[in-house]
Length: 300
Image 1 (cartoon, rainbow, N blue to C red):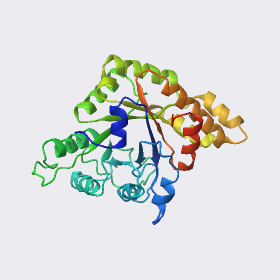
Image 2 (spheres, rainbow, N blue to C red; image 1 turned 180 degrees about the vertical axis):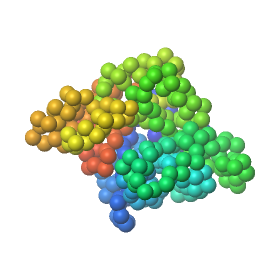
Image 3 (cartoon, rainbow, N blue to C red; image 1 turned 90 degrees about the horizontal axis):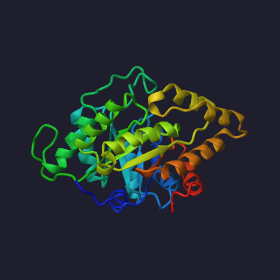
């Protein structure tokens, strides 16, 4: 599948891609699209709309449609935790009809971790199976149950990469499965341990995966020591070192120090062989994106 999205064109031309994340509003907010769009400069290739990442929010599909109306190109995150294959297919087709051309396929953290302990998870299919099903929509023109479609959508598929999952052999095997399932770009988890990420990139390059699918490395502006400690406990999702926590603790403004650390990491990752782009995980603080882009020289 090929698309005409700005992200696809940037990656296809061999240029460094620039993407950023946004969270949909917590409640009813018809002006959300305008406010979110104002946070991102024209240099950005795509805005990844999170799907109930840390708390229950407004529909990611609705938010992505609002961004289309503001002339931004969204990547719609779709988490399989919350919907079965019927609902997922319906949302994919609806998204395409609304002008959304990119889907990021995710399984999602278990809902009991922080989202809603009372909720029942669907987990009908996982992110790899979702990618496979969407790939068939475009390539074969059949839906998730094998029925022919009248007008197959043309979609760009993204997948998550977890640089710190070990053993490395299983990590690389999972990436290969995502490539076969149709992934056309990878967004990594937040990178703080640069040495560990470089080790993973070497394994990715040795397997030739970076030649098949572009790797876009993610950075996250930490806002507090508490947030850093929470991430530190999730070692598979971008471990935060004690040196980073010490810097946040000593700073008079922890949020600004978090941005400074984010900028440093973005510069280092941009220079690392095999990295094809930088993704800013705003974590709901979309207003930080422009400063990070400016200070890290990502718009150049």
